[in-house]
Image (tube, rainbow, N blue to C red; front, side):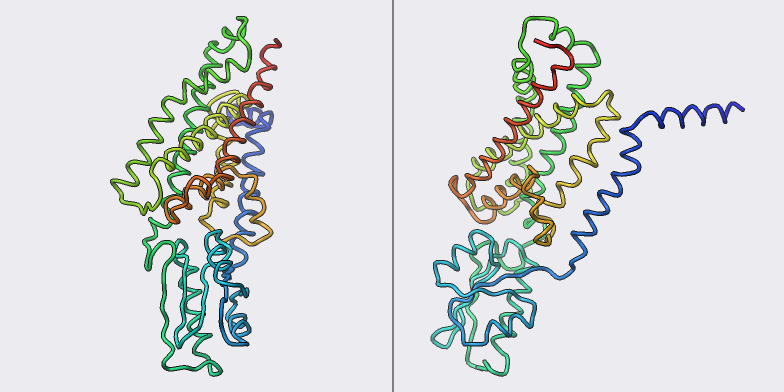
Length: 338
């Protein structure tokens, strides 16, 4: 009887906890749906630019499931820089000149193999036609960790700052410290900014430590400026910090804070650049902060982009930080009206 009574009490407790029920019943469905759409299209989308090649070269590439576009040399280089294509080819003077974006090794290998097959097809057979392959970004046989290292830096900073800041702010609220602050004449925005600056000191230390360790100890490929890496990770920490505080405002205890991880953190991994997404699903990533973080880090570390090259990513990250701070300020109304 005592076991039965205990089981009934647990069932009643869960029945009235809507957030836990949603996590158990609907969160797995959401994640499985994302995985289905992401992994459903098993054929990677590989785009190449053709600067100069015989007629019919595009048709041969299409047979190999490679998308091609005709353009001049400057347009091809720009498409490589923006990530619109993975390689470009120009056949001239008895030679084929191929430029490759090695930041995605799997796609680069597929593109190179397809270009060689198309070039050596019966209609283009030229035993003397040699290939001059130049890796504009990355390098041949780029280690997997180097390829994903930039994304991992962003994710690790984002995840741990979100977790620590959210739980810490929740403890401040549960201990009564926040209520005491709200009973003073202090403004809501001052509370939010104060907490952000307070937690921000430790996020700065964490960002510097993680970036330094990956670049100088683990020797992850880093072409660009280390100062830009620090700037990006600091903005990533700021987004995660303000988002963590925002989610903790909605949670009632540490367990509920943990429940936000499968809903807030996990889906962003799929849009961080670790997976080759179908075009329809990829558009969802534009509302995911981690996509901008990973994109900026990849551009700096592997492509050597400068400040102007990541300007839009930085603007998006800063906008997310401001947005979450504004939402935090407004949500504090439920604890006190000023």
